[in-house]
Image (cartoon, rainbow, N blue to C red; front, side):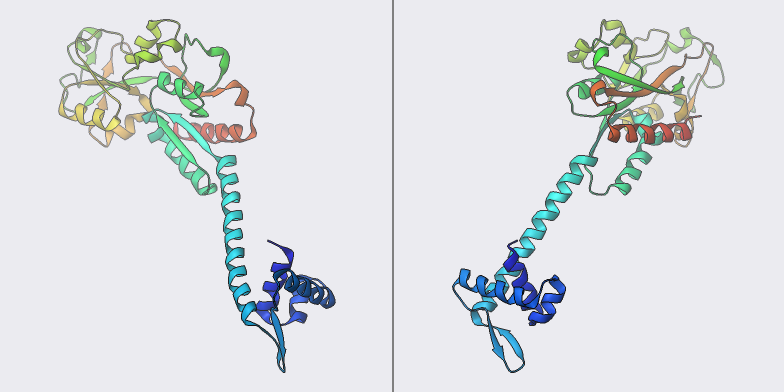
Length: 305
């Protein structure tokens, strides 16, 4: 805002050149001189002297009203610009699977929102191939998931391992296989539920379809019936209402137990795989992302035993 207008507003607010000069840290003669120049610019008289000091003229009242409105608009503009800068500097765009969201990512995001209440936050949920496509398209900055073997764009991304995790096969607590040691032949009699139906359009990210097939199911057997969904809530409902099987990280055992969903005892347990964070290489060393990576890693280590 123009210096003369700011000085005018201070004088008009307290109706004293002496008091305004002290608040503005300028001399009284300088302030009086500037107001005369401001009146010349506007072509009107803003103040008149009375026995009690000074008061606004009719023109001064109009300028005071409009100048206050202009200052308010400017302050609002500057605040919006500051918020925009904060939104952009602290923005976080992450991808995750449902399991990691439930186990620790939701806590990370909530803490981030508490620390940076003005920051933009975007969370995408899906399988590794879906999130890899989002990462390479610059729609997210990082994602957590199983390590992808046979990735065609491996030269463009960095993978930060966090922990190893095996899967269980989950069923409802009245399932026919409960209480037995289950082999592949027994498993093959029941339908599979897979979360996150693979998008065939994204096969360009993989060297061959065997990697894609491994994402569809980490079972070691073949089944004739497969149910697909992109919602963990749908999976839970289907498990409770049918004899379907669902492969998911063993760390979700406690979460599922409260819902009446339990793991089977397998003759041949499923091997553990590496879970970590994928980041575009050119962004991997940014201070902002390094801070986010550290927070996610710490939260995962606390929750995953």
